[in-house]
Image (cartoon, rainbow, N blue to C red; front, top):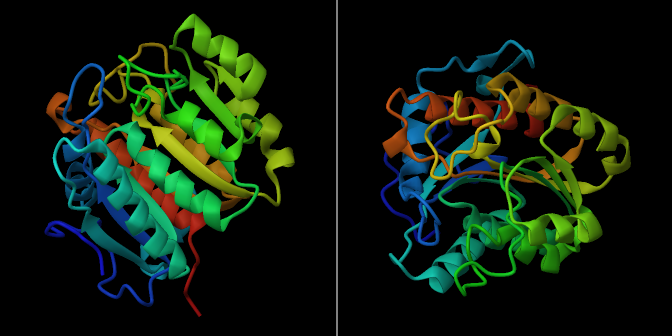
Amino acid sequence: MFNLLDRGTGFMGCSEDYNNSDIVLVGAPMDFTVSFRPGTRQGPQAVRQVSIGLEEYSVMLDRDLANYRYYDAGDISLPFGHVAESLNRIGQVTAHILKDGKFPLVLGGEHLISLPVIEQVAAKYPGLKILHFDAHADLREEYMGQPYSHASVIRRVASLVGGKNIYQFGIRSGTRDEFAYARDNTNMFVGQILAPLKKVLPELQGWPVHITIDIDVVDPAFAPGTGTPEPGGCSAAEILEAIYLMKQLNVVGFDLVEISPVYDQSERTAILGAKLVREAILAFGKNNVK
């Protein structure tokens, strides 16, 4: 079905039945264009491995994973160092998941993996809105001469869906040109996430929404395991609260990127990532209890 590596450790409580699952988790272990520290290719497996340390019940949502059907397909097999072919394979797997009527939940990997995911989600859902949580603007036209980079991924996404369909939260780093571009072309909220998210929720009602979370939106005091940490971010509690707020939206896709286990000695970044995945399944999935 998929061109996948060994599935390894599945996310806690995952089903063995792809056909009857509503959500499909898949890892995209790519970190070929990172601009500072590599290691995010190990992120998907790290999130899976620590997930067993969490409860399947979420007290904040009063929902339990036992009532949801989700399948962990493992990691996509990517040709090391080949950016274009890797993006192509990620897009193909996402397209397959969507064609089967399922919700794609993709674990990175660097942020560039979001581009082919969003491309396929946008093809299925016209009018798609992108909610982007990140420390960095990711709006460069190119980085070191390369248009496809984790530093330019949202600029590429803007060419797919239109900049005014992109809402950026928590941004606190970028070039002068990126912030000038954002003022004219996207909906950027510098530094904060919760107050502006609450403000825009009414205008997002009824539209299909894809959420992309770069873990470095969270302050490195809470999430040190990432390649480009940026002080001054939100707390772990705030990014979780953002998930709870967004459960009222028509969320049709989700990705979580830039967790780098090599810098995460306490595993607290991976554990936060696993909790975000758990809450995303419970917030955006279908309760299958009859």
